[in-house]
Length: 399
Image 1: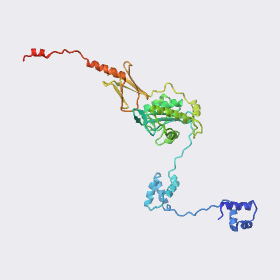
Image 2: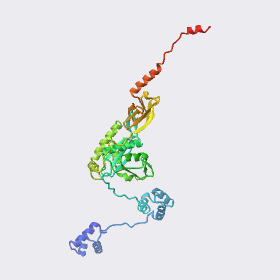
Image 3: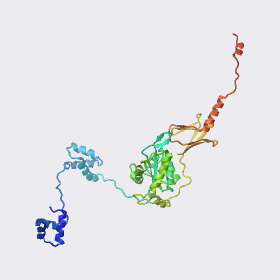
Image 4: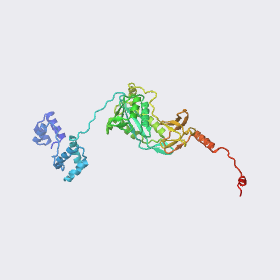
């Protein structure tokens, strides 16, 4: 058989050197008919092995029937079913055949490239660090990072929280928007419990948060994580680039390192948009609305009555209240950094504590302890009572 190299040489000899078939036969030793066939062929010669019968051939019609009934049936189950009918072939030839056959019954989902207008969308999600975060007092706690990424510039921001309640998520969203510097048209969320009320509708609290900022929202369909694929890719980048080799002293150190890392990431050339997010963000913020001042209140607020044991329990921790306000109602405000309480009737400060994310601890303000000891001392020092000698009672009661 004439190989590709020899076929090319024969054509060159005949067409360039103008050699006859007889001369080519004399120089190469090839049969004249072989030379004629090589010169007549316009395509390079190729060797193809004659296809033989496959062990899968007798079962192809059964595979088509099974896929017609259930296009999503797994390859493993199909192999078991035709194995019961006598199939003894391997897994590879079955998988290769199903790769060609299945799209006829279950067309794969297709995607179009999404183009974002400046300031159009900001994708939000929760990313969970692999390791718990140190929170002081020798404790670690599972944390979550509220992440945000603008669709046009791909500028990224994140805020560490320790629960999925809306008070924490709304604080995380506010902090991310502050880091990005402006308001987009809509926020994109998946069906997080504090965000989604069911049927694609937002919870009242989330709708109220968006209403205060005049923001729209997009709540994705179930299982549609690809719709916020830009942020999903950033999560993989955070897991492979931010987490490895880092140590954190506490939650504040975690946040500081995360902020520094996002600034560095935003200054790099983004592989998808082939531009620097920080540079595109400068252009994008010009097309966005400015942040209101102040931003919506995201702290927890509630009213409680100061108990006889003057402590407030929140997130498993006990924080002291002013014992002098026992029995009176106070308004409690809990932010990510501080816990405060004021008497409703007078506005007197009842407590001011730094919020601690470690659990099952008790915190007493020294001033509250002093007040408590003073009040307890007053209760011990009651009115003076005369102590009479027993001999006086002996005279009054005859023996």
